Amino acid sequence: MFEKWDFFPYIKLQQLYFPHYLHIVRQGGAFLKEKIKTFFAICILILTVPYVVTLLFQGNKTSVGRQALKSMLEEGSDSGRQAGKDGLDMEEYLTGILAKEIPLDYQMETIKAQAVIGRTSLAAALETEEKNLPASMSREEMLELWGQDGFEENYRILEEAVRATQGEILSYSGKPIQAEFHAVSAGRTRSAKEAFQREDEPYLDGVDSGMDIPSPDFLKVVFLDKEEFGKKLAEVCPSFHADTKGILDSVTVEERDSSGYVVRMKAGEEELSGEVFRSCFGLNSSCFYLKEVEGQVRIVTKGLGHGLGLSQYGANELAKEGKSYQEILKYYYQEISIEEISE
Image 1: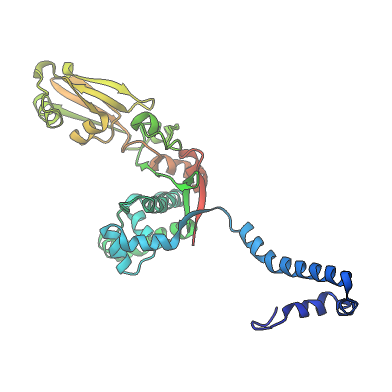
Image 2: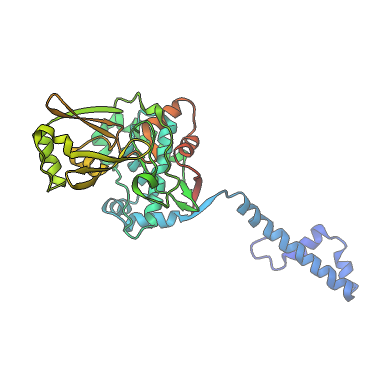
């Protein structure tokens, strides 16, 4: 290697690689000029090869930068600004997100998949004007929740998942995706286009997730008095007034998506979405079925959550079968790439 301030590095190259070059130079003429051109071409090649090799081996990287994400922590939501003040970087902030979003007794590959999802959500927030960051749990909150012994073990799990996936996000067409996830599907995840008319998210398509069926949260049944049912429904449909004797005669499901979730329904003359009905009654999901049983309204729900993207329970079952976090992510999100964010 040359010294930092060596004024004529090419002379050393001459001496090392072209022992007869100085003799040729003295001969002058056109031959001399041609050799000088060749020499400098070789110098340029030697100097640029390391740069080209570096580019080739960097791997896939998105345009989202780590420094930009760090700045976002300081400028974004309240929790993000506090994290910035506390000197947390993105990966440490992600640890707190992960603590809130997934059970830590799940398989490590499932937790790694969730870490990539959380980092993707941070990167996607950078693409929006609002820069609303996912909520993150502080170390103090974790310590209070788990106690000292539980904190040390759980934090080790979180750190391992974050470290193993460092810098990785999910991208589609070179941009971070909207990495939706939910706890348990209704046996099949939903298509964002079909359910919510989100045309620009083809990676959120429905896939089979029958491994969710054994989950204790897969099926839930609630009973409501007819009068209570009518009052609750009137909160979102003010004009709804039905005879309690046949109250469900006035409530109809108009459309379901291919995964069984209610897209559109009517209460009297008013139309509402399945998600609005779900929120009104505090249901586990919008995959529900209504029936009058012994003078009450029975509501049966399947799944837990909105049904888009990755099912955490289903992902955990895949992990138990030996699937890697990359395989799990590419199963639930179609045609995506797992890329590394730039510096």
